[in-house]
Length: 227
Ligand SMILES: [Zn+2]
Image (cartoon, rainbow, N blue to C red; front, top):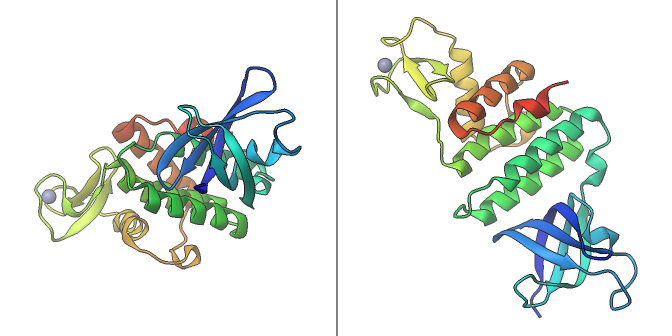
């Protein structure tokens, strides 16, 4: 029998004492029926706990039934502070919205890496900022960071315009807050350890990211960021 792995992103009650569990896997989203009862060993809790990464064997039904599983990693402990609960709720919302035709394998690895960063790094806002900026690529709304969104000039880029979704050159704007463009470019393109990304005012950055998601993806993450 084939064994699969996935991250539990949600679960709902289904009939008597059963649950439907929603997972994000390296192949995309999946729903599994987890039955309670004699047929299964006690201790199905691991298979219905959000943020558990599990490996599992399932039936071939249209709504597959979980046959057996074990917990690979638990990220539930991440939700030990209000700030991390907010970050996790945003991450789960983003996962639920991942387009069907995405590169799920790559995406899955990145999500697990992000959860590990959340677990190990004390700067929650930094981890969340990096996650949200990199996920733009998955959503296919790549910010134009290497040429001016107005005149397509590739030189003298001086500003990053959230509203227009990209860089502006010195001919097209008087605003030369280059730091903003540098940060978005670094966070979008660079592949390095979370600790090696430049630190800035993450409240400000998350506000910009929230606007970006709102304007270009119609995803409201600001509601999760509020107090
Ligand atoms: Zn321009």
